Image (cartoon, rainbow, N blue to C red; front, side, top):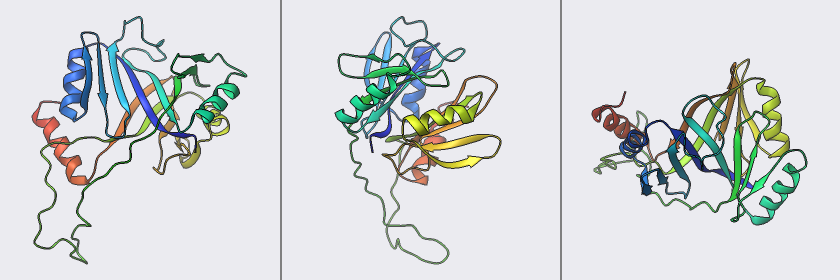
Length: 237
């Protein structure tokens, strides 16, 4: 199981201060902040980074306007990373950082990378089940209370692309992703082989490359609703 999920998402943004404020309200934990850079770190060890779109250190843009500049996928072992570098280098340019991170372009024109990533196992303290119409498992005990949401994992990213089927082939045949679901005439859900989520990547049909969303995982539906309510109170639409 060499690929274990998204390790880093890098965004180019028009307004760094607003982007930082939004994601702090959203619940991400700020790990590093400089005048031109912000990095948030999740409990699993993955990161989300923001820089001004015009920053020369940023990867080349593959979308119009602000948005993701690169998706770095985590790889479970150094051996698997080396095998990816050798295979992908057969038909495309692969740049390698001093720390071993690979940088390249996929068959859809998106900037992607690969880096050794040991995901941190999560130890979550949640109630053993909730009451429903047929059974009561929580008795004389409050449910866990959340003051705010605290996303802990990156579940998936979603992009629109022309010629979806041909783009999917790259992830399945070259990277070992598995097709987990299909919406006929629209898109394909893909899971990297080191995860058990429904999907870690969704590619859907669009006239040009575009970014839809990134999904973060929280503990429970209660934490999700607390996070949504807090974002509304803070004025985000």
